[in-house]
Image (cartoon, rainbow over all chains, first blue to last red; front, side):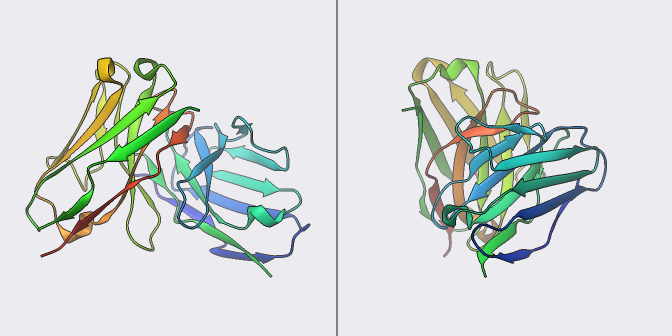
Length: 107
Length: 120
């Protein structure tokens, strides 16, 4: 099973700041990594798929990069609605796995 | 609006069974792979099972293999998860989600979730 390790566990930032979230895979997942945002009491929302492709309707301030084992989600300038938990997911190998999540909180 | 609506959750005793359903609307259900993902209280997301558009490919997490069965009825735009031999570790909110491919890509539409509680 591929283990995805997200860091940091919590990111404390102010609105307008840049957020950089990391997801590291225990073995290569090629470019088949997705990022999701989840707010309390809500279902996850797809942000990025295949490492760097923004999903439909996702603002341009969200971007993804990486391949192989190291991936990054960047939020260029945090908006108030961006404070949430973010998960990465690999869909290249079975079983599919999620990272443990990074919480982006208001500083 | 494209929508997925889960149902069938509830309180069940350890060892019991439950069947979850997911009704799809306003998209061509038969063209998409479908997935179940769960989230235990206060925990992260856990992939449970996936099924291809034609049901030809099916995968399960090791934690549910042999106990859970995923299926779909493309004529009725519905996805199912039959859960047997339930234990407290299966307590979670269960989400259904669609994906263009059974592997790769992402899960772009999610239901609101249905809660399953396994307790005596």
